[in-house]
Length: 457
Image (tube, rainbow, N blue to C red; front, side):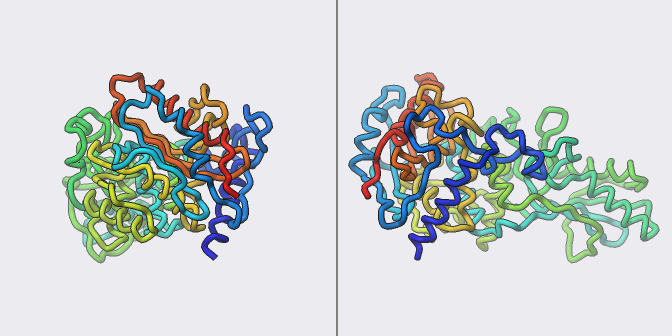
């Protein structure tokens, strides 16, 4: 039964690549809140692939085996490229049987942003994919409290042109709050804010010391607006900044906020108004499509809380590992300190990455993660790639990862027989090599699988 479900899920995922939404011009009709994510896009038929079938088909479970010898032969030359440096790892997995179908190298690698695949799978597993995060205003006596619900895309004001996954904003919340207060005859209030949903430090001890001061990331918070960016820079206290903005917006709507805006803890107070985020599924899609570090760290905390632990770096990382183990993903070399992959202390093996993608494909609840992956040469972080690895254009869907000297690519590819192969290729000692050259070498590994006739059926 599991194999049948896997084949059906893969059929749905593969089918996404033949829908006629190639250049995104139908976005306004198809996606009701802005630019479509990768799951709503596909590539031109058989782009630069000669006689390769235009649409990848998923074989029945009985003949969907991937030949490990053929896989290793196909990638051997590409993996020997000097541009990949001296520490290279590769793994391929049959997405139907979940069997490892070839591997090179051992141990864990610095994964960079491919870490988000683990975060995304855990979020779709532990949280209801259709659930939303509420940013609320509650009333307590003469005070109202702005309560953060951990919406990574809460905005100050929704832009005129909708942005995918951005559904809630403080302007709308202020309008609803002002209307509710005036209905009760109140035009003057004190304001507090509560960001206690998340715990622990807002910046990971495993990050480089200048990540926050250099405006690379905002301190993670359950309450922020525009991911803590104001005037082109990141604020040091995003929750306090969001509350000050909310006070101004209330004032614009005839509600006088008296006294200082202070941090407080909301209890079982009366709900005044609320706005709700996009669904978890759409947030995960945006995180993967845009490789959004901030959204990844917010989701990590939600995973930690949903698993019964702490909504912190540590609690979230522990919860992700438990999810992977429950899904029979190899975690023997896993070291996880954040959800985004910014930390150089993270270690993930190629087998773990590949098995994560394969595990996502086995359930309708999580299959969206595979659909969210960028299309090689056309969308997301892979849009400008595969120029020198044309066999992979349109055939590879993946998530890239990049830090200085670190490059990784994980996802799936359909070979010349239409057989899907899940793969991961990683290298983390390439500081002396031009990064674009290393990325092109990674692309050639994936393209070698697309060119292969690797079906063992």
